[in-house]
Each structure stands twice: as structure tokens, then as C-alpha cells.
Image (cartoon, rainbow, N blue to C red; front, side, top):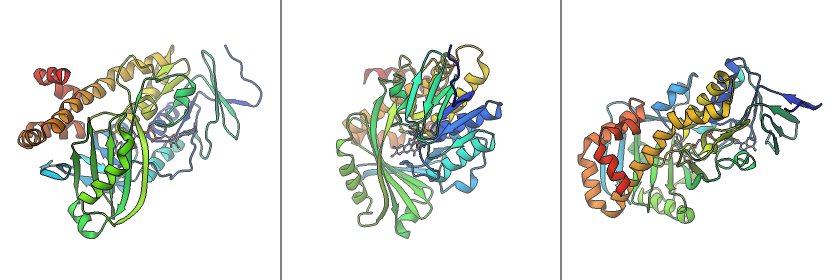
Amino acid sequence: MSTTQPNVERFDAIVVGGGPAGSTAARRLALAGAHTLVLEKAQHPRYKACGGGVPLRTLRHIDLPLDDLIEGEIRSIEVTHFGKRSFVKDCPQPFAYTVMRDRFDQRLLEGAAQAGAEVQQGSPVRGLELDATTARVTTENGCYETPHLLAADGATGPIARWADLGGGIQRSAAYELEISAPEMALQRWSEAANIDVGYQPWGYGWVFPKQGRLSVGVVLSPGHGNSIKLFTQRYVERLGLAGTTVTTAVGHPIRFRRSRDEIIARGPVLLLGDSAGLADEFTAEGIAYAVHSGALAAQAIDGSSGDAAAAYQRAVDEAIQPELDAARAISRLYYRCVTTWPTLALAVSKRVDYFWRAFFRVMRGEASYDSELNRWPLLRLSTKVL
Ligand SMILES: Cc1cc2nc3c(=O)[nH]c(=O)nc-3n(C[C@H](O)[C@H](O)[C@H](O)COP(=O)(O)OP(=O)(O)OC[C@H]3O[C@@H](n4cnc5c(N)ncnc54)[C@H](O)[C@@H]3O)c2cc1C
């Protein structure tokens, strides 16, 4: 049992990182009456390497107005295989919005502050001391302690490493360009996305529409990131965008938790969002899981009189991990097919509308990968064989 030292300020909960995971958790905790501190390394608005694709399912965990932040809507997907064998699938309604992460994340962080959380920006956490019940963190401004430390410090943050959690989480590379594209290209991709497949063993290139620009990037599977800049450059050339103005080009890892055996919470420390590897290996998106994990962490702390870390890990295992597992299974099947038999696989995926309706339902939050995979036991079986 630790006692608070002089000059150490105590909080009910401390959140490290004011991205989607941390801000969601902090807002929920503060609304529930918890004395909450957010320590954020950067000053918001800050750039975050991200396509900014926000599937509609993300919004169910966010209780803040976001309409004015929407840069674009996505209603159709063009699928290509290294620029060839193209086909387009339309969804009757938008299934994703696009946002600029600087403004989106700032809105969520402001939401935490409005709910009563104390937010310190420009305050990177420099050190962590742990015992069984208490975490003590230090920044340049001070020293703070808490029974609940929520590590929402992203894919490169230090807390997971310092707390010896999530050591087996896999890490992949993604590279994103913001391109001030000519009007013709903006028109071409208005309300539409391109997904360019064929990368071994999995990965894809994307184009997402934004206001006056396009997000263009490539994500590759863990261990295959070496050529990502070259792949991105070639992709940009295939899109006919070589020579256009690139305003930002940034690479950043994404982390994937592949098993319930991966411990993501222990004692006073809970890992959230990218820190916990909560991104899926089919679309490589993580914002929806980040905000979901923020909500689950707040709920576990607020609702548990005992071991909040255990309650949180159980909640993630029940509510998020089945999605990550199903997405990984689908990813293995789909990308294996499109890399091994591209002509056949693209012809089949062009013709099987069921697949696309299911995908749009998942993106809109009307179904889950897991429930869709359960409808097709043979498909689930084939994901284990391939
Ligand atoms: C190139 C790329 C494209 C992507 N595209 C998409 C997409 O289109 N859609 C999608 O859903 N997902 C996408 N993702 C994934 C998505 O960006 C992440 O899953 C999401 O940002 C995770 O949110 P988070 O809150 O966990 O972490 P982050 O958003 O990374 O936030 C972590 C925060 O912690 C802060 N921090 C770090 N260290 C410290 C410290 N020591 N002290 C204090 N604060 C600290 C950081 O400054 C940051 O603000 C993409 C990822 C990449 C790399």
C-alpha cells in the first residue's frame, strides 16, 4: 500500500496520451465524477499520420458533435490489383467519413476537458514507477500518482514497454501522404476510395477523399515495411499523381494484438487503443477500436470495486478481440487469394455482392466481422486452412 509523497499530486485516474483512446476514456471518467488528469506529449491540434478514414461504427462511442469536421464521405470503393483489374462497389449510404486527425483529435480532447478532466498538453511522460496498486508518473511539470494509469500513448509510446505489458504485440508499417491533388483527381475520388491490393503477404494502398486534397498511403503486414516508401511512390505514379504537391509524408507503425494471451492490463496499468494493439489486420484501421477501448476502460474503472485491470482485459477480450481475430482470419483468406490467384480472386470478389454488403454493414456498425464470419462456417474453416 503506497502513501502519497509530498509534491506528488494524486488523481483517481491518469490518462497518458490525448488521442482518440485517451480522450474518450478521460471524458467518460470525468463525466462519471472521477478526478482525471490527461498528460499529452504534443500541443493539439497536432498532425497524426492517418488516412483519417472513420467508419460509421466509430461514432457510437463518441457523444460529441463531429459534423463540421467531416472532410469527405465514402460511398464507393474501387478495388485494383497494382492498378489493374479494377472494379467498383457502391454502398447506398456512406459507410465512412474522412477527417483530418489534428482537428478530430482536438475535438475529442476538448470533450475530455469540457467534462472536467484536467488536460496538460506539451507534457510528455518521462518516467514511471509502479507497485501493485499505484502508478506514479513524472513530467517536466511534476509528479502524479493514481490507482488507474490508462496508457493511451499510441503505437510508439513508452508506457507499455515500461510496464512490461503487450510484449508480443506485432507491429507493422504504414506510410501516408497528404496530396494537394488537381481538381480532376479530387473529382475522380469524390465520395470514393481506392483500395489497391496485391502486396505480400497482406497490405494495401489507399486513396481517401478530403477537402482539397487526397490521403494516399500504403500499409504492409508486420515485418514487411522495408520497401514501403518505394511501394508508395509507385502507387502514386499508378494513380497519375506523380509530380503533384505532397504537403505531408509520414510513416508510423500500427500494432496488432493477435491473442487473448497477450496481457494488456495488470495492477494499476491499462493499455488502450494502439498501445494495446487494438487495430485490425483486414483494414488496418484502429480509430473505432481506440475509442471503444477508451469507453471500456472507463467503464471497468467506474464499475469495478475490485481489480479494474482484470475487468478491462475481460471486456476487451469479449467485445474487441473477437473482431480482431475475425478480421485477421478474413485478412489471411482474402489477401492470400488476391496474391496467389489475383485474376480469379478479383473476378470472384467483383461478382460476390454478398461480401461487399457484409463489409458495408460492418463498417456502418450494423454487423460485426465475427457475426458475418459465423454465418459461413465453411468460410471460417477455410480461414484456418489457408
Ligand atoms: C499511416 C496510418 C494510416 C492510418 N489510417 C487509419 C484510418 O484511415 N482509419 C483508422 O481507423 N485508423 C487508421 N490508422 C490507425 C489509427 O491512426 C490508430 O489506430 C489510432 O490513432 C489509435 O488511437 P490512439 O488514441 O490509441 O493513439 P494515437 O492516436 O497515436 O494517440 C496517442 C497519443 O499519445 C501521445 N503520446 C505518446 N507518447 C506520449 C508520452 N510519453 N506522454 C504523453 N503523451 C504521449 C501522442 O502525442 C498522441 O497524441 C492509421 C495508422 C497509420 C500509421
